[in-house]
Amino acid sequence: VYLVQLFQNLLSNSIKYRGPDPPLIHVSAERGRGEWLIAVRDNGIGIDPKYSSQIFGIFKRLNRKVPGTGMGLAICARVVERCGGRIWVESEPGKGATFKFTLPFV
Image (tube, rainbow, N blue to C red):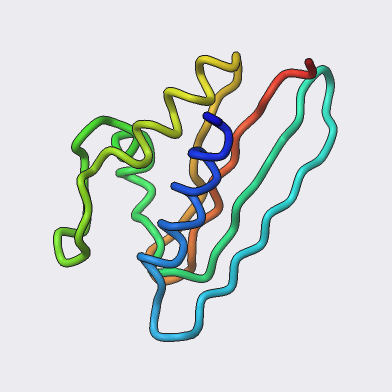
């Protein structure tokens, strides 16, 4: 159930924060050393790297023009951390975002 919410939040953000072009979203997974590396990449508005760590805090919102509570990425971080993984974003303004997270093998 929690992993469903994790993907729902990441996919929803990819659609919500899209740029002028139709949204393109790519989800991938690769097996690493003792963990999975999952990535959700989009062609949205992107995020300034200086905010890459604070966006996972509760009620932290960078774009107030788009409706939301500021809880989605905080929930994602909590789910991943409870599963024993880590989450981060790689992005630049105007160039989309790639949210990556790890999950240990079960």
